[in-house]
Image 1 (cartoon, rainbow, N blue to C red):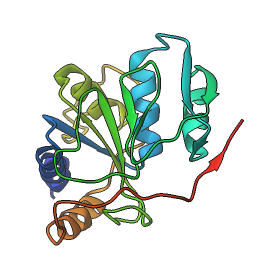
Image 2: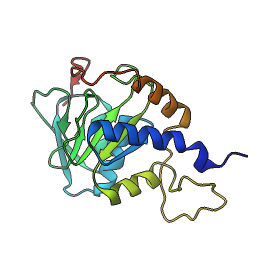
Image 3: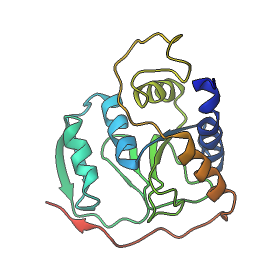
Length: 193
């Protein structure tokens, strides 16, 4: 019987490949950019209590902020490719994908079918923060390590937000046929208030 650690190797390879491409030390694959943003918000533990985002964004962003327990404010801000969830070091980079794109903090990616790396569903958190990366890996996988659960010890409650190995395999296949630079995706978002 194949061990969980072995079956999760493809996800680990996908994370390392995207992190290297982006310029980040760590990549943590999850099931969507929405989940990536949510985990970053939970990790920072409502410090500060209010998050400010552009009013032109995807609906799941304000939803994630509210679900994570923060207050929400909108600002009239034009942006392209990436924006900050102010004043937190969280960046929604769902519509940008290019070599060297990581610029610090917690940078969240989308692999939706309408994005650059068209896996179908999926996301990733890019970071240089080793402790955060360890926490994200546990949090996304129900508090579990990537080992056989018969040998695992549980130290936290997490969420079911991991990327399945078959999505990571598709991501690797698609990534290997991509170039190094893509324009930001524009349009498709509406203003929220």
